[in-house]
Image (tube, rainbow, N blue to C red; front, side):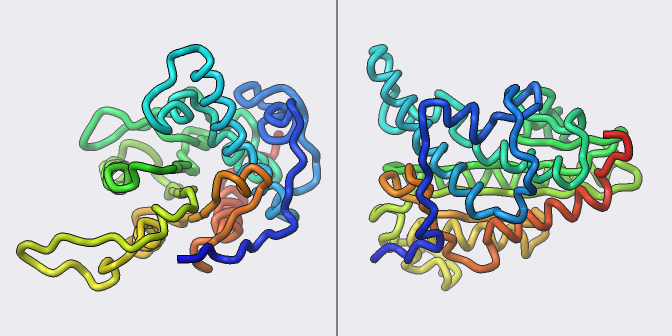
Length: 284
């Protein structure tokens, strides 16, 4: 199957050696770095900043793989780029800036530490990003990704993880683990490698019962799209964003959004709405 036309054709990102510090995580937050970002609102030029996050993702993966290979302790397959961490920091930095632009305090945002929330089926769950204001959980989100070649096993792991985390949080919320007034907002961002293996049809096994028709012949890219959509429609998450990007063009900031209802701009505006309603501080 041919790749979808890129919806940010002019998004080539010029990236130097200081890309990480200066463009993505260069923020006034102690948890994200010390270099100040531009004061220009990110929501008004979202595609540009999203392209930088995409470019950061691929370049970080490449750098981590090269470093581990040179050190002689490279992990098997693509795992070397995952265990190094930081590859999704571009998204986290962008989300942080969107929240601060909306009026939130930097001290209410948590990334890299203090990410545990009480669960119902387990003591705690560590999320990728939290905002807590005045002892109220304003929002929690997960930012995940997957590259080949093991799409099958990882797909099951990712879906089970996302569904279980949401169920655990909402049940704990119902039982009064946190918040008596504000209903938390949950978000899910997923970036998938765009490649022949992720786009080819996948067979399903039906030894006893028929699977739902939408899964018949669906590629892993389509399965992830369906999954993200169902997370929202079944109200496990408030909003989800699903993006595709290949290694070569992704390093230049190129990506596609195969589903209109799972675009990142919808995710971002829903996020900002939650912060505007419940997370704005008068004393920033």
